[in-house]
Length: 83
Image 1 (cartoon, helix red, strand yellow):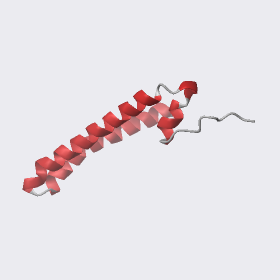
Image 2 (tube, one colour; image 1 turned 90 degrees about the horizontal axis):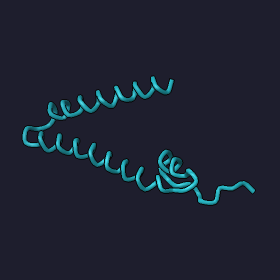
Image 3 (cartoon, helix red, strand yellow; image 1 turned 135 degrees about the vertical axis):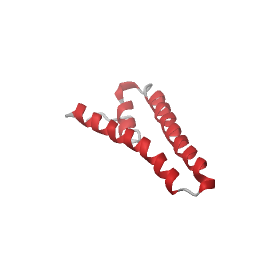
Image 4 (cartoon, one colour; image 1 turned 120 degrees about the horizontal axis):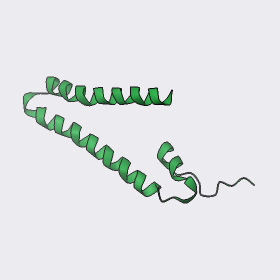
């Protein structure tokens, strides 16, 4: 099920990555066409950069806490031991 979900998600992202620039080119005024497509590509690139930086800095967290930080978006408390 997980493999099927990843494949479906990859298909959806690939479809959006191809169809959004075409849609932007169709609806944008002539003088803004290139700028809108460039901003779309720049936002994709910045998102990839942020994801890689997050992975790089959270990989150094000891005790496996980096996965929680990546998945949830905020770090868990450092002292999570049950008393």
